Amino acid sequence: MDGWKGTLFLGIGYAVVISWGLELSINRVFGAVFGSGIKYYVASLWGITVLRLLLMGIFLKWLNLNWANLWRGEPSFKGLGLAFLCALVLLLPIAVPALLMKAYHPQILGEYRYFLKLASGDRAMAVFALFSQYVYYLVEALSVNMLYLGSAKFVGEKSAIVIPMVFWGAMHILQALNRPLPVATTVAILASVEAGVMYGYAYKTGNMIGPLIIFFTVVTFAV
Image 1 (tube, one colour):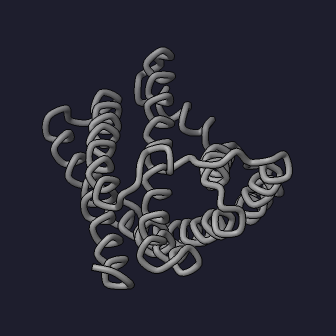
Image 2 (cartoon, helix red, strand yellow):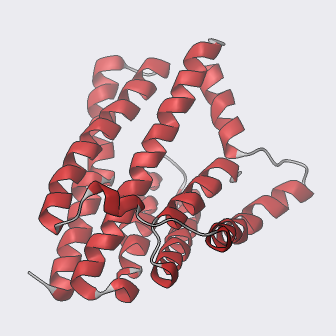
């Protein structure tokens, strides 16, 4: 299996097995076991994260990649600056209107407040939930790097940029299952653009740390 046929197979497999299919299944199972609340949320995060790592190991073996490929490269000061600049460009359309309306709160702070409320004021549990969320983000970011590198094996690095845009970014439209459709659509568009920027950077620099920096900067400081 090679070319676009192999790439599409990888993209669909990623979306169904490693990304959205996995998340929807785990959330349903853990919801039935733990109900709602902070325990359910933390348990589902770790369930998704651990299973995602195991499944990624299978995909990496199939793609003839190793874990170190997912964070390869040592970006120079210039490369780091470029990565942060890319993240800033992505954040501006989101953050500037919020700043003008004096309603800007970085996502990491909003998530902590949400967990604190969910944990009924238990700060230790809220901090652990926030830590769990960022471990989840790390594994998610690595999985998207894997999707790009695996696609590049089939169609080349330049053409592979579109695969994370579609099978990770645009798939955020599935948030419409529990969020208003206009919100889910906006998130899907923004995530697709983010993926294009992340892997445009990777294509130009050959560095896979840059996409991780862009991902974490955006997810930390978005509204």
